[in-house]
Image 1: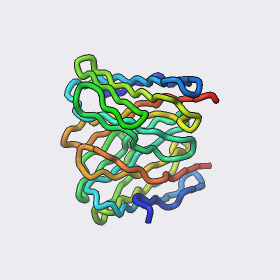
Image 2: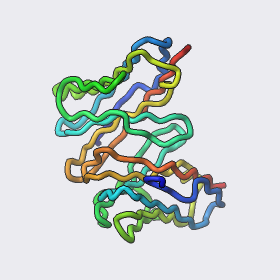
Image 3: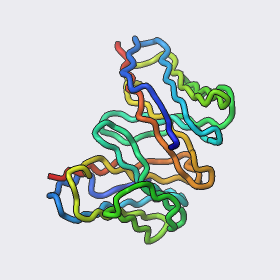
Image 4: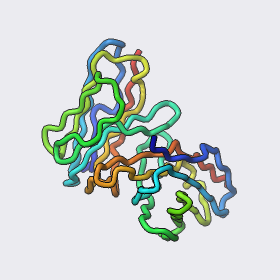
Amino acid sequence: QKEVEQNSGPLSVPEGAIASLNCTYSDRGSQSFFWYRQYSGKSPELIMSIYSNGDKEDGRFTAQLNKASQYVSLLIRDSQPSDSATYLCAVNYGGSQGNLIFGKGTKLSVKP
Amino acid sequence: DTAVSQTPKYLVTQMGNDKSIKCEQNLGHDTMYWYKQDSKKFLKIMFSYNNKELIINETVPNRFSPKSPDKAHLNLHINSLELGDSAVYFCASSPTISGEDAFFGQGTRLTVV
């Protein structure tokens, strides 16, 4: 059974702090990793993708991938109340088969 | 124009009925998906189509039948609806078969009473 694990939270951080969201996955053969943000009552929205070990930065967001540890994380710097949402980790397990599996999401709350 | 559009946005129906949800994407993507998000917000893949061909069919009751008349459309028909089918159903599309840059529709909230 291919799985993607996340702490459900809620994770509460003060405004301006760094929020750290973590995700582990079960299949070593996975090549593509994604972070989606989902506001309450809305659809998931892609915010980061990462394919190689190391860090990838995009504005206030940094995705980190460690394939040896089967671990991917998302750091949000200078957290804002508007970052309050559920963050979903997704892993492509299928390679050419297109099986994009999601974790259960971590709910982030940024307090003003 | 909405990139991935689903209709209807809300659907309330009685147990035992048959209903359909439609999805259209204008992004030119080759791959489309149906996901179910339950009350605990778990987003679970149901089906994946690439160029109108079924490539993933997860463990889903055969009351659920997807249909892709062309690569821009992926509809979901559900027979004999049950209370447990109540959820939000999301359609998504991706330019690649491996799911990169998947873009989601706004969702269809199905309530079975």
